[in-house]
Image (cartoon, rainbow, N blue to C red; front, side, top):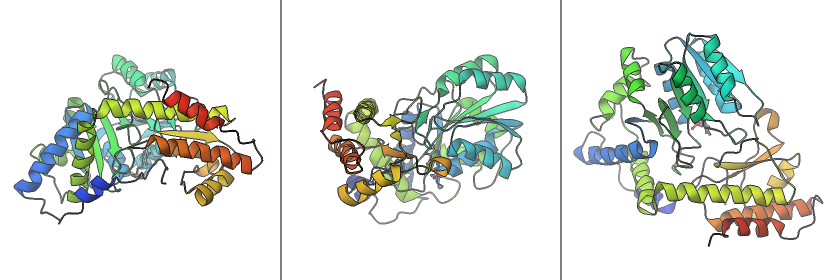
Length: 369
Ligand SMILES: *Cc1c(COP(=O)(O)O)cnc(C)c1O
């Protein structure tokens, strides 16, 4: 059972859709598929423009940094992925300033407001919606609303790789929203997507940047249902399949509700057996538990209960474990994993097993039924 917060398992119906013969990308046949996929993407982003890139999520992060920063970037670093925005700026010699917090701590709205007031040269802000390093949720929508009141020309770029497809993100004040194929969208890695505001499109077109990751040339092509370079045809076919499946089986809202309930039920269940939820503002994409026994717990889960969950990275590599909630996770899978954690804790002599985790999980998950 793969319950890591990316990659997530690719459902069988998606694998089947992608198993057909390779089609040429410059054909009416593929353009029709591209158009349908693009429309579904615009809907899930709830934004006026969107592009698909043949790259992992980081490629879209790089494209947004290079295409949307004309003067100086503000990057929000509460973990590995926020730190990456700064590293991209460094790689391209783009001036930037960073707000850094511990990996369990989201940035405050005030800190961002202060930073942009202190430095009027900042013209783009880069932030994760969910920072997957510690599983925290940044107050992106509130930050965007406050920043736009002060200066509407500052671009708000939100990395939604572990948020789009997990929850309804209010994109009203966002200029670019990034996502990738192998997390909430349950596809193989290799495709990234960016939702864009009209203001972002205008800014991109005033000063086109880069060659392969040139958003100006991609926007121009993708508006006509083709791509500047060879499209990732197979992954786009898979994306159409997963998005239309979600849409036709209860819709995105139902998926968001289900995910939120499963996430909160998992958190409550693990808290009830003495686990400490790591982030102060947990996102619904994953449950992150702080535990010095994380490597031992993960090992027991893998070897005895056939569950693969994630540890941490860098300084919290061995002190957290992360359980995925993104995608089409079955209730019984979430129930199995929290029960396995309780059994592992018993085996390690941390707490005697009494079935509390599953009792709390089930009473939260199914109380509305
Ligand atoms: C996984 C992830 C990325 C990086 O995506 P890649 O596909 O590995 O390049 C960026 N941001 C967040 C929040 C992620 O979870």
